[in-house]
Amino acid sequence: MLAIFFVVMNHTGYAGQLYYLQIHDQPLHWLLMGFSALHKTAVPLFLMVSGALLIGKEESFAQLFKKRILRFALVLLLFSLLGYLYEIREHLSDFNYYYFLTNLYSYRLVDSYWYLYCYLGYLLVLPFLRRLAPAMRDRDYLYLTLLWLVFKGVDLLPIFVLGEQYGQSETFVLFVLEYTFFFPLMGYYLEQRVDAKHFTRKNAGLAFLAMLLGTVLMCLATERWCTFRGEWPAIAGEVTFGALNFVSALALYFIAKTLFLRHAAPAWLAGALRTLGACSFGLYLLQHYFLAWLRPVYTSLSPVIGSYPACLVWAFCICLVGSFAAFLLRLIPGLKKLI
Picture 1 (cartoon, rainbow, N blue to C red):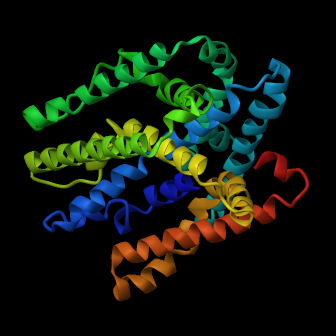
Picture 2 (cartoon, rainbow, N blue to C red):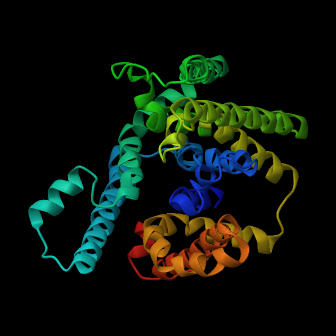
């Protein structure tokens, strides 16, 4: 639920996610920039949860293909078609089969559906992850985390030293595996391998401090990069927020698990969380429509309570209305198995 709220916030543009760029001469921009960096944990959190739930399952290749891979391929096809039909309606154009098929292949029909392609890739390599994850030792997971910390942290060094970003070589393919390899394995490790005794308030506090430190470093790097360039372009956060967002994602997962291990949710709250959580995928598929349809919430509230608070209300309404829409769709026979 937290991850899908972050997804929605990521798509609010200058109303919310990029609002800090418009007030970069005000102290408040530091706090809002930190929130924007935190929103970038959305996809990592989803993939960590998926790794926690799926890597340990026993399934045949046939079951995996039918139950998961084929399902997501159908979702991608159907909802991309819906998006294309909506685009045709908006622009009063004709249906073009060639355009649809070629752009479906190259994921350009609905920008936010890039995650479906990413997730399909993860599902295709899931059988290998299921063999790999249990065989890895604790120090292997530690090495993997340190590897990410070192090479992701190095990405920020040129900004601090020279004021410019110099990305790693495109032929250095370690981080091509970030979404299909690293985050699912980390989710599996935290869920299946770490003993419950380690999920303490002290360790959760340390995780929070690590998240805070990582966020501060990314914000300082963004400030340095923009100051050196003499401008605050929309891509500012994209340059730096991906460097240490894995630290925040690991910390958030650890903190959430610590909270729920130590405090059992009442039955009514647990039921509500399960229901809303089950609607998060449907909400993801629909959120770009509700961003447009519910924008009047933002435009009407912004002059009254300010842009960022209005954006938070807008995002909350999208999550609430979108979840209800997903809940209704899941009542339709056949659709529940897809979304």
